[in-house]
Length: 99
Ligand SMILES: [Zn+2]
Image 1: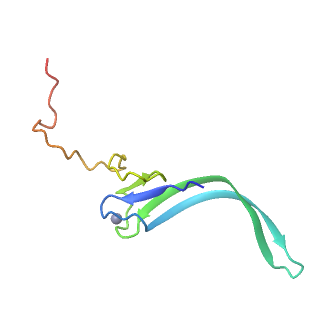
Image 2: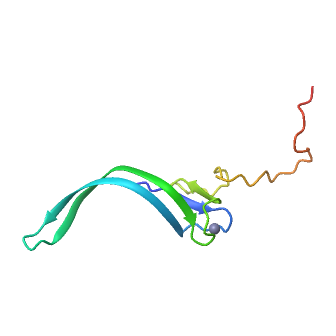
Image 3: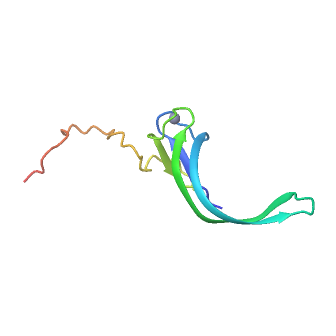
């Protein structure tokens, strides 16, 4: 099972998130004679992540989704909230294309 991972770009949190998820599941409810329920064979028919918040910041505006393959912790994942460019090459904000 490949679960999505998240990262908060504000505080660097990788492990604590409040995830609001709505899912539709079908499962086999197996009752014993005494009426005790045992849920088996849970099948997820549909699942949708509604909201992911950083546990520490209390907001999801800085949380980005990172793939389960996190072997190279590069910084090329697209943030949900653009933090702006970091490389200042001296060009103004809106430089017209040279002709
Ligand atoms: Zn955070």
